[in-house]
Image (cartoon, rainbow, N blue to C red; front, side, top):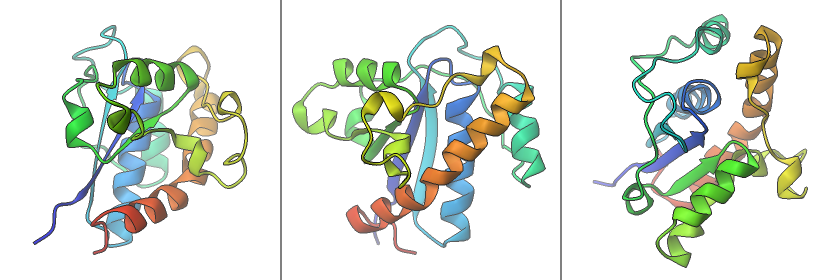
Amino acid sequence: MTNPYRIITVCTGNICRSPMAEFMLARAADDAGLDVVVDSAGTSSWEVGNPMDPRAMEVLARHGIIPSHHEARTFNVQWFAERDLILALDVDHFEALQALAPTPETAAKVHMLRAFDPAVAGARRGEQGIYDPWYGDKNDFVASWELISAAIPGILAHATAHGNARG
């Protein structure tokens, strides 16, 4: 028996980008028959206890993903030991997670989500972020979907190569 490969996606409030990425990655891993567990959190406590933004849920639903219950929460430093891959949705999340990391080994688990998108994999970290759609309209959530989607194959390939993700 193997342990699943554990991924957490992290944004600011855990109501838009990170839960979208969580449910999108979980669906893609399931569709690929991979042993991957995905969850999400925020770097702030602003939205703790709140549900996912309805605009994020609408975009997911349009693609056949009906999220199970989601309640925003703040990243817990103990999760560095419990997750194999920690995906920051933007540069400020990456920097906050690096600052929280208790060791260089745990800091090495933190990556920009879009670092796995071949179109920007070699770009500077500042060019790999996904801007916060909360301030925009539904088109900004569609843009988030597209940016996250482009990175998913690379993330799953990484999980398969570096863990027990094989189904």
